[in-house]
Length: 297
Image (cartoon, one colour):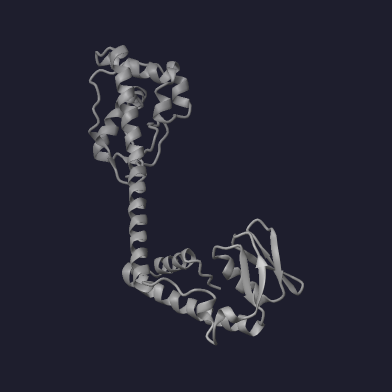
């Protein structure tokens, strides 16, 4: 099995072999070993082997190794002439074909076949590099396509869930959660803001409302008012109005939390029915709540 480089090990040592680590015994290990390391054999394997392990990894089983073409006449190449090639790390194919000792070996193999290396070697190198490139890039293209298809399916289901659970949109905070009269007739505390989402940070008995960058915009004197301000800051506007009476703030928040809890359950149940996956349903429900500016505590 190989990825973007190719090599056959040559050794005189006795090594245990298996269906994963094949061995070939010949009368002249050096001669055949050099041939099996040639780019020509690499090209044969690239054409005949099959991809089975993902990411473009190529596998050559035993029967394909047995069927590799071997010239009846192999060139006599002394080990001393290719000491560097036999001892160095083999590079990826596009870089390996640029190596001087690689070209020397491949030239001798082609000459033994009666082929002009100046004509055929560049063509073999170009063809091999293109085959390897396509083999390695195809899985990436498939994964990208699968991801795009998956994202499209997720977004389509999310649209259907919103249509089912929120056909008329969401309830308006805070007025839709005040049930004891006209919300607009209440007494308010008014704060100027910069239109960005705010989060509370407790500071002694006060709560500082801060932007994502840590800038303090204003302070409130209770945790309930801080939560109220955080929810309002998710809506567009440069002014935040909070009911002056603490009990009214707490009651509105209680009704709001109950609404969010029930809505989340509805979204998850509908998404689960469509996707059959709780993890996906939970993620989808969370995204929908966030997209509608609903704060789930």
